[in-house]
Image 1 (cartoon, rainbow, N blue to C red):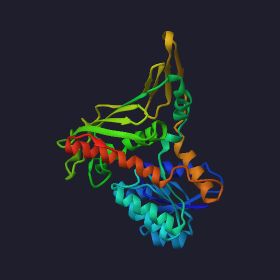
Image 2: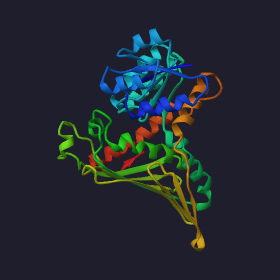
Image 3: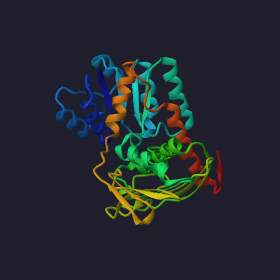
Length: 329
């Protein structure tokens, strides 16, 4: 099964590495302008092609799958064009910057009969397997807390409303996807936000700053709550800290490390169990499941509709920041 990668950055590399571990799959090249980064990636991978046009790439490579690993603003056009040219499509999260674009992608997948999924890799990491296994022991209701604190991001698109949309839609969608999966239907969201990065020298070229610092509260119909803080506007080189917790009447789970490689389970009586060495292997698992779905051996790992609901929650949070009101869902 032949795969094209749209993009040449860190996510493209993750997809290439993951596909290499999947049997009967060959990455045949990149769709990207011939930038130094793209040329370097092609040279590192013998036999890769490099095409600026998706149509040319499809005609030459005879690929069957397209992985979209570009800024979010470009997801819809590439995914739709790929499906219309007969490719099954994987796109990185979030599905799109707007619900309308996401709905269009889902509709084109239906019309063309192509398989389509969005990569929420955290749902398929070992750390989340471990956390989900232990959640029932915490009792109910549960509280989920997140602190994701980082220096200004290295890519301008990550701070642009029209690029990746800022951390609420670019990264907090990971948390929203997991919460929808674990906690069920949300009732309301309230958020407050700021822009901390607007005067940072490295971001001088950004003209449409997205909210980069946000505190989000989500209430769920089953009584669970989430308190989510993202801050991506701190001084260059100052910090990088991710911290997640599930708290319940019978215990606490703490997920630590950039990808939560360590889980601490706090129980009654001062008992603390530490689980280390959990793998950040979500990309491999989700892409393997997608390849199986293309082969007719199962369903896609995450539907476009699921991805759209995570984006719906992110956009509701941004709406709450804009209006100062609680958004009822």
